Amino acid sequence: MKPDRARTVSIYVHVPFCVQKCHYCAFDSTASREITWQEWLQVLLKDIEFHAHHRDGRNRKIVSIFFGGGTPSLLPPEILERILVQIHRFWPLVEPLEITLEANPESTTFDKLTQWRSLGINRLSLGVQAMDDARLALLGRPHTSQMARDAFHAAREAGFTNINLDLITGSPGHTTSQWHDELMQVLALKPQHLSCYALSVEPGTPLAHNLDHNHLQLPDEDTRDALYFLTQNLLGAHGFERYEISNYARPGFYCRHNRALWLSGDYVGLGPAAHGKITLETGAIMRWVNHWPLNDYVQALKQDQPPMQWLEISSREEAAADCLLMGLRLVSGIPRDLYRDIAGHDLVENKAREVEFLEREGLLHIDCDTIRFTARGLDFMDSCLLRLI
Ligand code: SF4
Image (cartoon, rainbow, N blue to C red; front, side, top):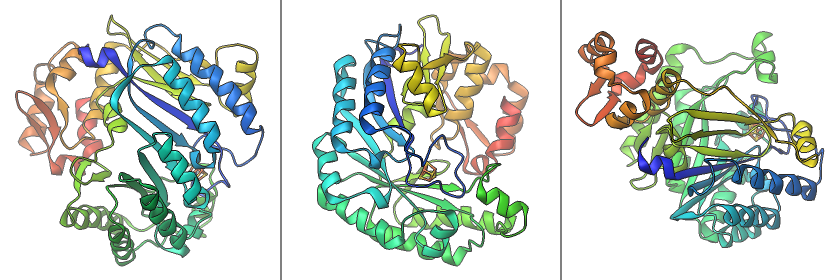
């Protein structure tokens, strides 16, 4: 295990509450108010203490904190403050600490933004998803494109200099000319970071139901490909670096939190349904998932029981597969010695035939320091990974 990996950890806090359930959403979130903020805070404080005292997770320095959801911008700032104080009580920090908060336009106000800044939150991730009101309605989002613009400008005014916008491509009826127009609107805002994910249709969602019953249709494969390449070309032409398959940033604004996770960093997940992963000194990897639904998580903590269940300890083979799955999403790939540390072997020696094939096809590049997919390899990432894992 690399020394810095053994000494650091990222913290993820899952805030599961939402204003309403979006039509495509299969995340662990809820639009019902089952408990008060105060009740939720009390159990979360216990959760932080529980995980802080767990062996091997303690005494590590925190490199980043990420409030995700759900809709963390619904949290009253005084609750956020209590959570941060509790985290700082137990874990030392690495400066400069990146603290990200995911926010949705309908629950983002100038007052909240200024309070978030004063709490040390220095990266905002706005759930914009689309800059077209009809598409936002189709996705079941409770905001309009004007509300997204207003939230962005308010964030700038409040002092946020590092803002990400989350966007979704490939929803029913999405065309390249519409996407071009949306991207130009987004670029006019001058954000530092853009996450552009292709829509994933999850079973059991209203969107899946409407597609199954032919009320809606997804764009065909050619259109989806054209959307994918349009994103790369337009953002590249406007000075954004594509540093991960779906993530683009101005130089110096990569998301530290996600980058650490893509490079096999350890993380402590707090809050219901959050996952965690800690690498032990022996190299074994322990994983857990906090209870979900919400009531199971709350009741466990109220009764001073562990709020989570352990997952099986990962074998070295599984850890090596995870390292490739996560790390090869990055355009810069994986340090070759990181893979060697985790897997206990060198990829070139262990997968000689597969590596040779992928290199010959111009899909994979390996040198002394790095294992990475080429631009073409990233376009066919899933099938390339299948060969390697
Ligand atoms: S805001 Fe996000 S987590 Fe909440 S319902 Fe919509 S997609 Fe799901």
